[in-house]
Structures are given as structure tokens and as C-alpha cells.
Amino acid sequence: MSRTAFMSLVIVLFLASCGAAPASTSQNTAQQGCHFTITVPAGWAVVQKQQNSSSGFLCAMTIGLTAYETSQQYSQMNIQVLSAGSANVQQTIQEFAHNSQYSTIQLHGYNGYISTQTYYVAPPTMQPGQTTLAPPTANSPGTETHTEYDFPTQQYLYTIITQNIVGQNADSGLNSLIQSFSITS
Image (cartoon, rainbow, N blue to C red):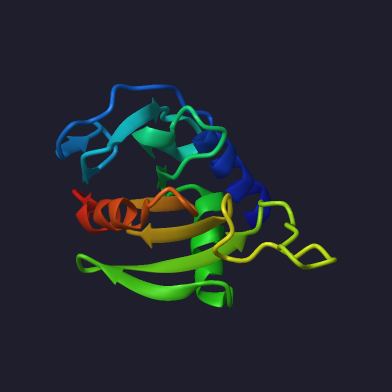
């Protein structure tokens, strides 16, 4: 399986989400068998959990900004844990060091990789007094920034993907989620 197909599978698994009651205060959460904990800040909620021990896939969790979860797009964080024993996962881990899209990062003593991509999903707009459409910018409403964090350990590959939608004021919540993420094994 190519890296592109593998990451496409990861994204498809994460984008399927269901509703959950909003959290009124920060709460620490863990999923049995996932080997991590995370503190979910007020205004965010775990909207999906999935576990499966087949093909090296252990579990996934989606945490969403509750004020926008009924929208077509909402800011969210997706976490996936894979067994590092899988040949496909091993190939993916090897590719991080050789892919110029990734930079190294360290979080709570774990070395990893980070990649950021911005998607301009907003349509071009016509500004007052202009006669041509202006292309969307990084600050256009509806623009998404996806940041992928990958933390390989001897046993697991932890992949975190944040989806930040411009205009939803999700920066501090996503930053809080990343900073609270902790690997437990």
C-alpha cells in the first residue's frame, strides 16, 4: 500500500463522525488499548471512538469543536494508533525522514514529524470596486489548515491530524489538545 493510499485511508476513517454531548469543562480521557491520554478542553468533545485489532489498526478517536459539529465542516483533531509491526506502517515510518514535507518535532520527550498543508476550500470572491474574482487566502472563511503529527515508537505509530477551519477560533483548543496528548506506553 502506498503512503498516499495509506494516509487516504487514515483520513477517511477519521472523517466519519457522530454527535456527542459537549463537554462543559476540561476532561481527561483515555481509550483502553490505545496507549495515550488527552485532556479535552471545554467546548470540545469526543465525537467518535473506534477500536479494531485487525491489520495493525488499534484504535482511533475524533475530538471536535462542539459549537460547529453540526456544520458541514468543523475544526477537529483525529488520533489514530497503529501497530509498528505492520510492514506498511514500517514503510511509512521510514518515509518520514526522507520526505521534505515533514519536519522533526518533539512532544513530551517523544521525537516525531510534523507536516502542515493549507486547503483553500472557500470560493473566489469579488471585492467591492473590483472587476475580477480574488482567489481565497489563508484567512478566507472556510479555509482549512491540516497539520499532521506522527510519533513512531518501537511498538506503535501515533498519528494526529488537526483540521482547523478559519473563522471557528479553534487555535487555542487545538493547541491545548496537542499539548495535553500523552503516550502511556
